[in-house]
Length: 200
Length: 116
Image (cartoon, rainbow over the protein chains, first blue to last red):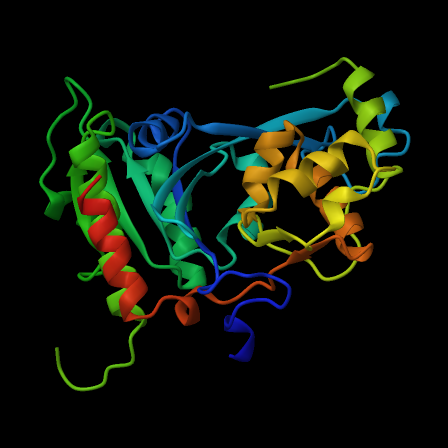
C-alpha cells in the first residue's frame, strides 16, 4: 500500500506506528492490573459518554436532560522506540459495553483473553468474539493466590480452544509474566499472519 | 462510573457544537496525529485546539491526545476532525495491521518487549 510511506507534511523518516493489543476477559479478572504492570505510564484513563441505554451518544444536544453514564477505558503504552509503540487497551468488562469492542478490535494486532480458573465461563464471550472475527488471541490464565492450578490442557478443553491457540499461565502482577504473555501473543499473531511460503 | 452532574456535559457540548461524531473519514484510536508545520502559531484558537497542536508536533496517537486533554475519546475525535478539516493536523489513515508489521518491526517489538 502506497500510503504506508510517511505522510506528506511530516519530517519523520519512518512512519510512526502504534500497534494495538486488547486485554479482554470478565469483570474484575485483572485486566487493569495487567496493563498497569507492564505500561511505562500509569494506565491512562479516558471515558466514553453513553446514553442510559448503554449506547454510544450520537448527538449531545439535549444530553444534559438525560441520564448518562461514562464507561472507563484504561490503556497503557509501551514505547519500543521513538515512533513505535504498543498500546494495551483493557476492554470494558460488562456485557452492555460490547458495542465498544468492534471499534477497539478494528486493526488490532491481537488480544489477550484473561481467564480466572474460578470462573472460567466469564471469558467465553471474549473467546467467541475473537474467534468469530478471526482476531488472533492467547488465553492467559491468571493464577491468583489460592486459585486452583489448572492444567493448560484442561483449560483448553473447557474453553473449546483449537490446538494452536496458546495458553499461558501468568501472574498479572509480575512484569516478567506479563512480558511472556505479550511476546507469546505477538509471535502467534505475526507468525500466523504470514503466508505459508514454505514449511516452517 | 456514573455521572449525574450535567456541568461537564454542557461544557463538552460547547466544545463540539453538540456533535459526537467527527467529520470526514473515520480514524482509529491509535491513528497518528501530526500537527501541520506552522499551524500552532494560529492565535485565535480555543485552548483545547492549541493543546492538540502543541502536543502533536510530535506524532501522537489519538488515545494519547484524549488522555492528555482529559476528554472522552468521542469528544477528542470531534475536535481532531475539526482540526483536520481546517488543515491544521493530519491523521494517518487506518491501515490493516498485518500490512504494517514487517519482519523488521516484528523483531523490534519482540526485542523491545524482552528488554523491558
